[in-house]
Image (tube, rainbow, N blue to C red; front, side, top):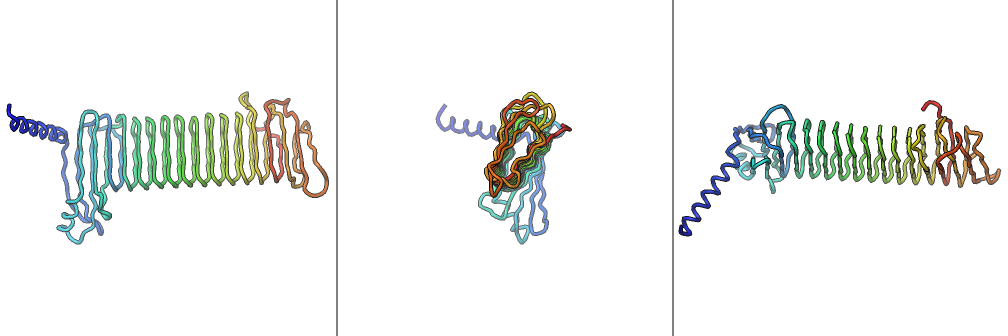
Length: 380
């Protein structure tokens, strides 16, 4: 076979291959005007696949799982133009593709270089989809009712997920992240937006450059924000939470807690295991719970008072100190706690030591300026 015939054969094979990648999809389109925009809407369907990828240079992405056995999509190309003819010229600069190869289906849109143009995706996939990958450089990303894993990213928009069966890994350049219910591990990050998580079946890792973190429940948690507040309803295992300057409010904690704030108050409990709690400025309120897993703990603030609620039946050994006391400095509902003070006039130090409920793990409590109170918590 001569070289010319070989080249022609290869080109023909490549062309047939390209057709095979797209021939399984069917679509229709229409052009209409909405306000100051012209929108070209393309609807179509493709055979189902295990992996679905959706990527757009600008625009929102919405994916929903259902009972259908195919991938059904709607693509909307948005441009601004004074007439239909001008709109068609602008649309000519945009592009999209729908390609199915093996176990993967990819929907891609490109409007790079056109600031007034963007492309949205609405996609319905089988709920049994094993992996979903969503990416846009600017726009909202949402997905729900997916049994597999979900990876999602946006350059600055919000991310919304719910009813996800597999692992979740999402990131936004600065938008809010809102996740309802997931069955396993979740990792989320945003450059500065708020994070709201309902229920996580595994471990949660969440970070924001400065937003608030509002968390329902998870098995394990690692939470961080540059300056917002952190609120947790329930953590079944260990938890780490840190903020550069906001308050921290942790409700039901079953594992060990490591908590730090650069300048906000901290409220924790009931907590069953040990804790290391520190704030540069602000009060601390800790409610201990009965159990056998409590271990050596420390509560410390530079400026602020500390209140500790100890239930009957939980034995702890207290070592507490106030450097500059206000009033009595240290007070207690437990007569077995021995309290001493350095003097009676002006700023003074106060110390307390003793075994509560028979003693047990050591509980260090310290404030540079403020008061310390030990209160009996009977209903826990």
